Length: 98
Image (cartoon, rainbow, N blue to C red):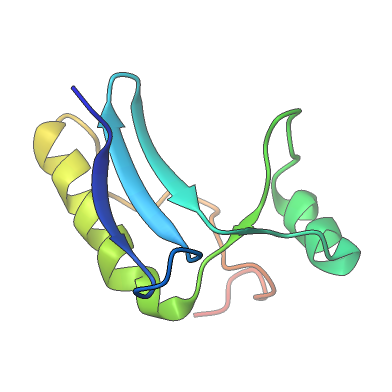
């Protein structure tokens, strides 16, 4: 099965985009590769970056497209538990803050 295109941020050729591919099971994000050291330091303090990984920036208006891809993935995989992971917090938030 081919890569499924969900949408892009605008109508230009150079913009962020979201894709899904069933084999291997992956949701792909195309966006600006983050290179700002301060942001990368904060990001990797929460989740170490493995070789080949990158932090990618997508604008907030891409949220609906990301959700569409996630909903389709979850519909295809009902065995995936849809619950918050214990201990997960937003980057920059205080532990235990609501």
